[in-house]
Amino acid sequence: MQDLLSRLKTLHRPRLLVRTARIGAGNYSRERDLRRILGTEKPARPAAAIMRLLDLEHEVNQQRLSGDAGYAISRHVEILIALLGEAEYLAPPAQQDRPAAAEANNTSPLPN
Image 1 (cartoon, helix red, strand yellow):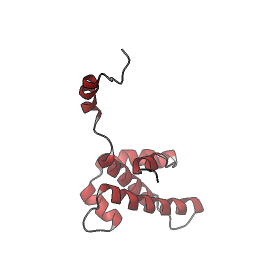
Image 2 (cartoon, one colour):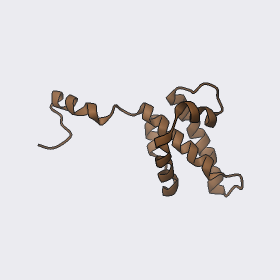
Image 3 (tube, helix red, strand yellow):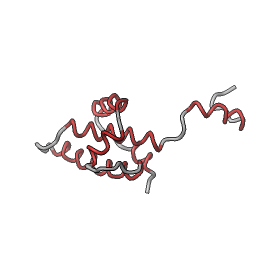
């Protein structure tokens, strides 16, 4: 089974959906949004939340592809926003910490 970040990277959705989700991800609040989307009182751990969000996104995407009248683009976008927000919790540390470590190991990401 692929790790969660790899699964997220292999999702292929229409460009407009992804762009909208990326814009909305800047305002993502785990406490506020995740509870509403998942319908739980207490937010799940990031990995568990991503698994549930991937299932929800798959269902909504199937509605989109089949032309289901119940498809709501706003719901699809909010799930994608949550996926992007939760992925931040699983992503490697920010780039700012890497140059010092790269110098210490003499493995700079830039050519000399």
